[in-house]
Length: 219
Image (tube, rainbow, N blue to C red; front, side):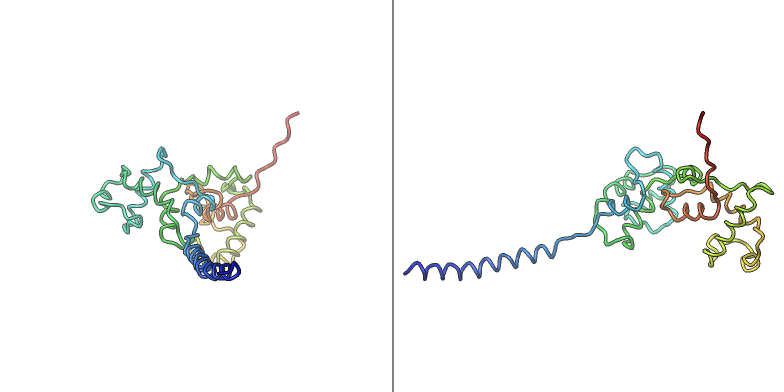
């Protein structure tokens, strides 16, 4: 058989085999799970995951128990949920291990459970200074113009009355800042947020703060 014929036969054989190999590799590539891990999405959202030595495990566990539904699938949950002042190892292990699982996005139920129950929380009052803001003074006659502006922002951007203020339909048409709004700001200051990207913190900044006064440079 001539070299030409052998070459043609070899080329034809390779065409079938090599082509099949290429298609197989492309098929495998198409089946790769390119989704992000829950950990990647959580950290990129501004949250800080709990670590094994965190002092917030009990707080997160007590909040988790209130939901009843056991979204992380804690083994023996019915019995363990009876004790809320001590976080079980099963809860800690679920938080620490499941964050490495891949999720379909922020709508994924696993992501939502981990992002809510397995992250560090900080009081809003401790975060304010980091964004160059200070809380408005609720003392009568203090920060009058700032309160008026803040109230205007709340009315404009909270048509559904996000904070559930009393007599909303009556109050929202007034220029006078209701005491219920100032009281709510004072209460929200002691609330918790996962960080500066938390909508609870953003709302507080928009509706209850002013720019931090500039400090004069030392002589």
